[in-house]
Length: 379
Image (cartoon, rainbow, N blue to C red; front, side):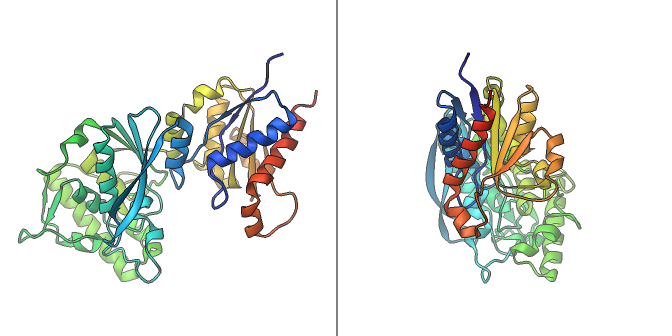
């Protein structure tokens, strides 16, 4: 009888373990129960925080660090990765332009910029890659991706020819977009944006109204920012012939989705779909007897593009059973049983506070997976 083959494809457990560390804990537990099990580790993510690390871990790639312009214009240290194929780069915009880089007192979407994200794209172009995957969650910005475009050589000018300052607050003065300085290397690279946000750029469901307040926008600021993005979209349509105001996903990351589509010819895709593709998960799942996944928290919202859902959908295409583990199991998880997850197990051995749960994550995953493996191994 052949050794059982298990594909281990969890997301990170936020603030506790990276996806790679979860994989290692899973394997340690499984092998206590089934020593001859073959465990194929595929660290996963869904386009949000941890995506670069997961893609690097899953493909044997490398992380690079770069000093770039933060959302408030000050230098910050950000990172990007080159995947194991040497041809694909991965960026999280939050690393350069994220909400964690501003404080309650300093967050201000009128002035915050995505310039640093553009600098990360340039750093990837310097590595002569063919593809760039960009996760765009967690932004501090509402500038329509104008800062990103500025870093790549685009100029945004006022009526009197002055270069506009950073931030969504300046876009109302936009009169001319000068494209002649755009980095020509962008034409040779395919850029994919990992996003599960379907909001348009403007309006009640747009970037400013929906996401502006969490970035520090008052009601008056929201009105200004939304009007400025509408003006920005109008100038883009008139001068560049691209109509992006109502495109689903254009409003992601304060309109960075729109900016990437216009200035980098990017394609918006589901984050989990991109990670499934670049980790080669589907090919590995074909060999599996059982697929294991997991995330820090699992509930009914998991079905909306989260990692365990994406892993389960991939597994079910090939008729493979799926087990999920989680630190916290929330409401209405029964809907997941119709979405390809066969069983969900909590990892906590007894009631504990959050701090203890985060600190003991690895041992809890290991113990839970050992017990599950013992059950799976019952003849």
